[in-house]
Length: 244
Image (cartoon, rainbow, N blue to C red; front, side, top):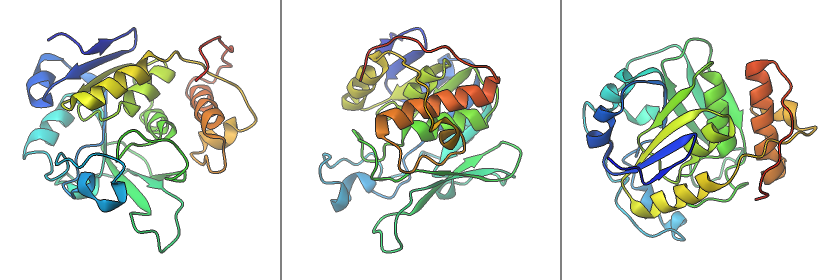
């Protein structure tokens, strides 16, 4: 199947993951955010987005277990909505919202990683979104760091491509699959932006998973730099790239 978009790090397919995934082989990490079946795409709070029905149902029975089998490690956001085996480690995103916040204050990811549960903190209203359930790039980069030395990543429910953007920023190979062409277009534009790792005093804060109060652009790149430093233990040279 011809990719919708491809560069040295990211390959994006437009289509149904049930048809595409069996042709791809194995991956080091499955990192994805499937539909939760809670109709978030038609939620009145999200009215700046077109009403759609892609979140009306959870993935069909057997699909998530099949995807998990194709990767050595898996991180699945919204894991509390799915029937998945019990495991030691889960990840959580604290959205840093007050008790009277009308949507979820926290989201949970199921994993098959070993180790204690971990928390990432970033305000849900503190970054630009092009998809009603778009995760922060820093969150997905943090997930990759928690999976250890992974070089190939699969996201079969790619949405606006945040997993691919995080993987590219970290120099990892990633395959994205998305069935809605409007989101493939958004993903392709995001992937076409060059990687620009920066340094800054907020790097240690970002590595801890707490990016509250950070400037969105600087925070994203300092988070990437901090994660790279944490994973490799080496200082990275600053490179030139196109400003966003």
